[in-house]
Image (cartoon, rainbow, N blue to C red; front, side, top):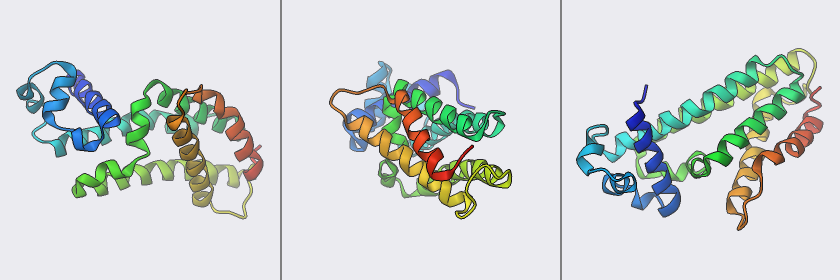
Length: 193
């Protein structure tokens, strides 16, 4: 469990990386971003590696409730998926810097030791979404000529594309408003009821 100060430092590190690139992610720049000394940052994170690990833990903690809500939903599969995408997009819209960290694995390539942790995060999310589709297939509410992992991969790819396009716009639009059209297309593709 991260402390309030650790979360503040992690969020500052995410902003530094999103604004200036991974090369500018240093303990000094994180400290400067929130007006504390480098020593104050080192009291919480012994290295840039530990800070990057904490970023992954923080991102995972933000995403887990989204997937838990999806899997626990009593709505139709179409409605549950629409709410999931809408809530995810709302989260990303209010935390735009997270999108660069979440959808840019190359950010973590500077620290080869983080690849297993990043892969575990991505695989965990894929597993959750696959479980959603497996349940829909079992209840005959979704096409069964594709396996749940393939359906989850297509969904993730679609989400990633929309978020990337949104992030690159000169005049950002309302990302959460895209949830309806996206899930309408996915629902048709997957025959979600």
